[in-house]
Image (cartoon, one colour):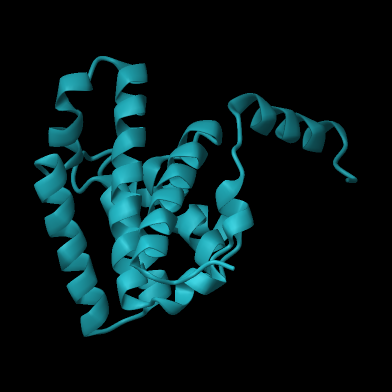
Length: 181
């Protein structure tokens, strides 16, 4: 049986980060979409996958590809809001997440974080995947610190799964070819 001590929280935060990175890559979601979807499924946020993706889609690329606030950071704040609700705790967690992300990555702006890779689409995607994982790990640590009860209820089976791009495409094709299933 899993414990809910600090070591378990660290391991769980790392698993969340790994799964967010996996979802980002295999499902070709943007940073904020992968973030909210994985947090929602892992911690029982109550949204359907479609709702989670739709709610976070506008944060991609620094708010609608405007290169403003990093979409991974914005998606992580949305995930915290989903699971913590309103109030001073949520605002404090958002401020702390922003500060920790900035200290770790040097900026909170998409344009600053991706500037060196502006003309390298594949390199930028890989870099953003890493940033998405980093934001997820920071957010998961903060979430579990504020709500340690979520560790025991986390969907660890979902976190342990690994999707591949080919597997995701095969499932999509199967749905198109056999919509009755």
